[in-house]
Length: 419
Ligand code: SAH
Ligand code: SF4
Image (cartoon, rainbow, N blue to C red; front, top):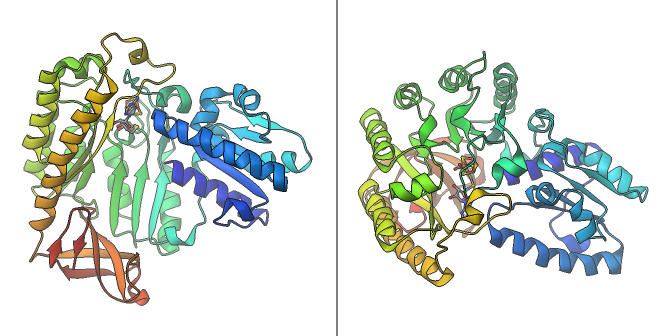
């Protein structure tokens, strides 16, 4: 999501003649787009700003901060970092050109308003490497208030884009050569909830009819909003890829309750069963938090059991970090950091071997791959992804980019496949 926001800003600035470069030390303007979902990202941000401050002193660059940390601090960011020239929250990134123009005139510029408008969602990024695989934001914000999460406070309430605009944007991307589209939102499957417009499954059906688009994905889904109608789309819409990211966060009902997730372990496992009944080949990935306040050994063991039972294709797992504004930050019974990290290491080791087993089970199979790019490691290789979102590297040349090929998988590794 943040990467996509950065690309949108880059596209807007390119329209006024600015050119994107890789190294901050060579730039005239440096914009730091931030995330505050976990503490680590915030710590990294402040140490980066220390380094950029000396760059500003030496070279007089224009320095701006955008994204969630900016939103979380609001005007306070200008006091904390008195040397920055502008700052915008995630809902104001469409004003990036204005912000830069002010900075050029030596006037500071700040905007953290969140008026529920979707202007910031409708900007098309201009990065050519995104031509084959396009990302389209269909909604913003979140109404769920999971007790650990800062997102509702920094990205505001849920607002969905009009389905006509979304379909039109994707038709335009298809006309420019996009083969795959990923629909983005903090909670995509609650798209248009309670609004008189297309429901999320109906939006998928409309996109499935767009000529030129061969693959559809969406991220991220909330288990409580995974309706039967959406489950039925898997296996019945030919372009919808057999892959879903469905965070479970914890395997103990006590912790799920404290997290305010709105489902039980049994409810989650039932959705997994329904998905696999409908679409046996579906690849399922998830997010999980360990060391949430009150998590005892027994609770953590339930998380381990769930992971062993579901056998996710992949998982992102994090040690809990208390965040400003959130309900969980004032909960008692904090888990000591060391214990949380130890649990995290155990969980990640189990998941790593499950992922490897999944990848090895692909050996000998022929699967469809969309070629995205040159391989990172070798000149005469290309990389692409299966419909189940697994990376495949194989011999090939640049002219294969954008092609859908049938590839024989010869080897499964921890993070990728060889074909
Ligand atoms: N909207 C998405 C993503 C939210 S943030 C969703 O609901 O799935 C991405 C992930 O970060 C979450 O799924 C969660 O696992 C993790 N996360 C969020 N807040 C956290 C915190 N305070 N400490 C540790 N991990 C956190
Ligand atoms: Fe955060 Fe929960 Fe909303 Fe995801 S669903 S963004 S974890 S509050």
